[in-house]
Amino acid sequence: MKKVVLATAIAAATLVGSVQAATVYEDNGLTYVLKGDLQVQLRQKIGDNQDQDLEFDDLELKNRVTYSLNEGMSAFAQLDYSFDKRANDQSSDSQDGGKLEEAYLGLKFDNVALRVGKQNYSSDEFSVEKAYETVVEDDIFDLNDDAGDDVIRVDAQFDSVFVSVSTDLKAEGNGDSDGTKSADLFVSTEVGNLGLMAAYQNYQETGSDSVSTWGVGVTFDAGFATFGADYGSMEDTAEVYNLVAAFPVAKTTTVALGIQSRDEDAGDNVTGWYANATYKFPEQKGVSLFGEVGDNDADNTDPGYLVGMRITF
Image 1 (spheres, helix red, strand yellow):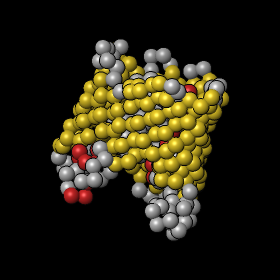
Image 2: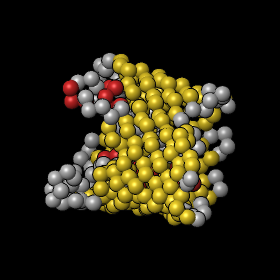
Image 3: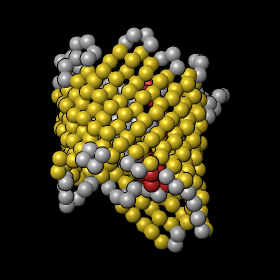
């Protein structure tokens, strides 16, 4: 599940850290922050004759350690574990406990952060999608990997412009590497109530030719609602677009309506829709209840729905 963060909000999360995170320890230039995302939902998936089940998405703990080195410079480390697989699948192949989501080290120089290790690609920041569960595709870049084990990434905030560049090393000859290679770029900015974003990826799997992918997106805050659209194209493969509108119906409740579409060059085209509502308790914004319905026009497909609860810190 991808959480949409736009323009300067992306930079704030990347370069500064979450304002909801719990500071466990802080002394002598050392800060240890723990962030959590815990979610459980009753879901009936979109598809043919699907049964209801309880799903955990997410069950994630994020650990971040930051050392202040000198004026404008700091060193940081991130270690994220997700326990979704262990909670959702009790079979023998899931008994390894948690899944390592991210593990990287980095240096921050004023408004620029360099991080190296297991992490998301820069193109993973792209999308206007606001669905709890995907009905077609989150965005064009989801047709490839969105993260790697051998990633070098640089994020920078320049006034209202956020830029992120990453590369996933092929690590040929290393048996522990997945063998994929990727170069990614993401740029976003805000002009008044208008948000603009663009992304590019050149991706290559082991034994395959490289493929280029690009996407552009726009959001507009009209006051009573926020509207968004993105479009992406993957070379000789497919095109994907998203349309979304999100609006508050009360101080505590937000509703989102969206359309997702994937048009494949081979002719397999699918369009879907979703509608969801989220209630955040006024006493604690980190506690929310939500519900969603959705469907697509694939053959032999019945509508799906979900209701759930989420706690973040």
